[in-house]
Amino acid sequence: MNDDHALARVLEPLYESILDPDRLDDFNVLLGQATHSHITGILGHDVHCGRGSVARVSGADPQRVAVEIQSLDLHVDPWISRATPLLATGRVFNTEDLLPNAQMRRTDVYNAYYRQFGVEQQVAAVGHYDGMNSITLSICRDDRHRLFDEDELGLFQRVVPHWVNAYAIMRRLDLLQQRVDSLQTALDQAPMAMFTLSANRQLLRANAAGEHLLGQGVLQRASGRLSVPGRQDVALQQLLARATLARPDGRVGDVEKLVVRASGVGAVAITAHPLASPLLAGDAALLVFAQPVATAAPARLEHALQQLFGLTDAEGRLAVALLQHADLALAAQASSVALSTAQTRLKVVFDKTGERSQPALIRLLGALNAVC
Image 1 (cartoon, rainbow, N blue to C red):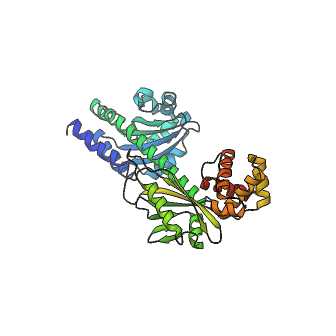
Image 2 (cartoon, helix red, strand yellow):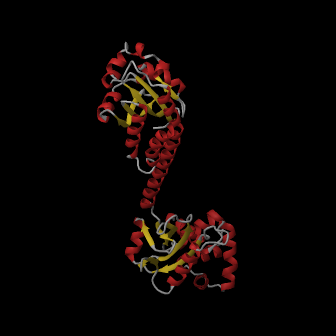
């Protein structure tokens, strides 16, 4: 078997392990065969505590190795203590260079740990080191009279950069998955109703607050899509369609906002946020927030608006009316002013509050009203 073929055979399960971690076991077996190692393994090292851990082992009982290595103080291990100051991602250590086996065999550490597994020589490659923890790929030889030769070490050296790259990808994917899981938990526990929709606007999932609104009938599932009761649903479907519509430059659509009236809660402010283009059909393409706008407490809310944003009495009354009715014409009527006057005052309210749209203003008023 030539070196290139042996290398390709070893690397195949290594790269497949990025998506299927169990393939690391096959990688260890094939690496052991190619280098004539009796044990191969992926081990962790907590540098500060001086403790080791086992990720994968081939050629020995993983549970036994894990138990024995956890009881070992790596600070007093001559091989490990000599390698620790030199740790770096991609670095390769040969125990014969750190402390020849003839001397290592006379230490208590060797008799307490390495002798149990017949380790006469170990060569390790650091896949990752962050100053506190390292993860290494190790090959071990059990014949003190036959150390790893140039061909075996050469093959291992050629594997090392691939091992570093593969582990970096695995670690990155693992971190991303942790972020996704954390985000999923946060979404589920968030008090604001949230929904994810596919590119064809099918409702994929809702968090607990979203399911509550669906259960109340404030929002509905209709033919698998998110909807609202009555004629307002046309406006909602148009909003969702605009948000998922790809633009000529290839980017996703713009953030879209809408306020709809809803029985029992007064009104609901809905915001649709386009996500990155989905990779597969059925992937989430749209994140929709739905915020019920509670009935306003006029006196307290008007006072808060005056104190926080400097609104006049007339501007404050219009803002409260807008929160109560979710419609500027109705708010103008409730405030006993003409629609044109209400439109002028609304522009001033936008300037003073820093908001630029009715849905955004209503969300602000709703949040402030909850505090009041």
